[in-house]
Image (cartoon, rainbow, N blue to C red; front, side, top):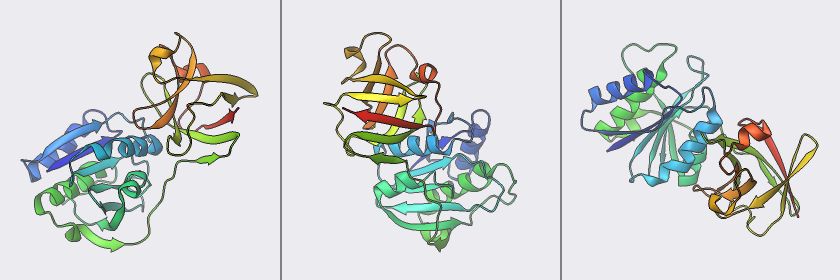
Length: 253
């Protein structure tokens, strides 16, 4: 059994979460997909989970915790999908991935350590729940079934000659991952203009970075099939001065 982690915890907190899991179920494999999601950035966490979950064996338990609402009335939930399990806060972080695989059932988590702090549910609730599921293989006992949950959808409006979308993730190179995928629209043969702050920037579509000139502003299909705005050997984030959640307007010529 594999348990994966997507969090904004950093050190030492992600190590503590691993310790709790291993204490309960020593033989489980823990794979840390990312522990450096930008703090409080639920949308980036949702994208990382969405773009990575399917590359793991069936029955993998995916734990995703970016939780600015920790200690509040928000629920802790576990989701069973066609092929996987997802565990985390009910703030939408699990939903794009879970919907993509096909939600079968959602339960409110009742499993926890004897003492639950108000600030570290990753350690006290989500880690024990994942370990319990890996050990007992009994999803029904993790908590009561619920029907309502907080949704999260990536914003996009696509027309023939213009696209409105948002930045859902920015990687360490400053590449801007947009909320539109190849299945939404084929941009490979389009001339594109980016409209920002009353300025227009031409975006050259390329298959990969090698086909762009150094410093050139480009758009391409990334490895997760989402379109990305990039600058070869530069930072599109710094050049355009944008953040995750910012809206992007593209004119399709």
